[in-house]
Amino acid sequence: MAIRYTLWLDPDDTPRHRAVEADLKRYFIDRFADYPHIRLFGADPYDYDAPFNRLYDVLMARAGEYCEREWRYVPTPEQLNRAFFLAVGHSNKFVRDNDDGDPNRSGP
Image 1 (cartoon, one colour):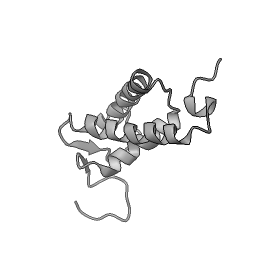
Image 2 (cartoon, one colour):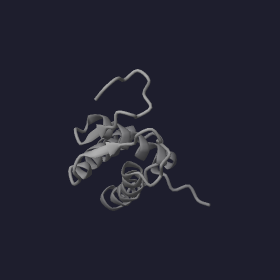
Image 3 (tube, one colour):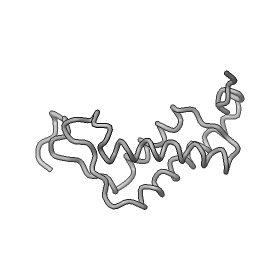
């Protein structure tokens, strides 16, 4: 199996890696805008049929294809994951269920 990830093939091209990662974050935020407000998982974060989890899988695949097409760059799973969750943190499209498993959170 050949190494395909651009970060691994050319680890010293830091400016390019950072530019792709910033674009990935923007990409995800733009894709979130295509959806109505998205409920984050409730008491069972491992419910793989939950809308958030299905959205994650679909957007990971699309983002990888986007990078290859637009940047001629193959992102690592870690780069995709980090950009996705940074985008979730900066997006106003997500709402949390009251019962989200956070013991420090009370009420909506």
